[in-house]
Amino acid sequence: MTEKLISIEAIAKRYPAPGGAETTVFENLWLGINRGEFVCMIGHSGCGKTTVLNILAGLDTPSEGVVIVDNQAIDGPALERAVIFQSHALLPWRTVLGNVSYAVGAKHKHWSKAEIREHAEKFIALVGLKGAEYKKPSELSGGMKQRVGIARALSLEPKMLLMDEPFSALDALTRGTLQDEVRRICLSTGQTVFMITHDVDEAIYLADKIVLMTNGPHAQIAEIVENPLPKDRERNQIHKHTDYYAVRNHLIDFLVSRSRTFKDEIAGKPRDTKNVPLVRPVAETSSASEPLRIRA
Picture 1 (cartoon, rainbow, N blue to C red):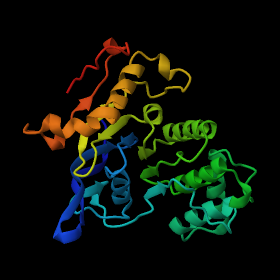
Picture 2 (picture 1 turned 90 degrees about the vertical axis):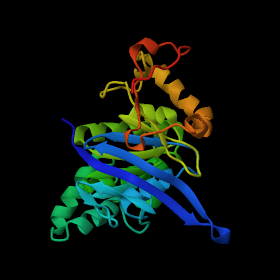
Picture 3 (picture 1 turned 120 degrees about the vertical axis):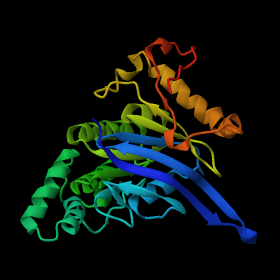
């Protein structure tokens, strides 16, 4: 039986607009994330993806609703929810070991220097940076800097890892390598992850579930796609899975057209926003030309 770790309940985000009006970025969002689950959120710029992530991190607050983590409402930042940003956000005067140790020391204030170092070195090795412990950020490539950021976040052993398009600025080869590393680490540690991305292929490769957001303003969750690929998927094999092109085409079709028209599709129709349907691609839809079948 799966255990729910995160419960997003009816959250909305609104900002004041000129003339006393109000701008609603998104509204009435409901989403549950199970322990050990990797969830990606996809949507066009302006739908509030980063705002949702910031609310989960405790860096922002919803205008309405609540987010509950492990049966407690979020009321601010906490080391149990670690964030990996688009940029590495490293301290330039500290070495790789210094950057990771700084985070470890912030969480484990009563540890000795030797304990902090040992713990930091374990996660530096986990992301493949053993031997680079004493290099400063200026001596590292972009991919290596992101590895340090990942090691720093994982060293906190958080309940939830929040990822804000962490690979978007990297070249394709480095991006693929880091995706492989993150997937390997999360599978081995059972890490719970919430990630926002614009990359359909990245979402299919990494996620257990893919949350599709309509366009803003007044964005909402349109669908939650359950990834049909096996948990132990491999990059060079996923395109051979019978459901791969069906789910890929479904995601692209949503981003290209339905994200804009979804509100018109449901206009005037009653909708249970607490129970957004899971879209489950099935084996019979293996042909890219066939329509995707949906089981609600």
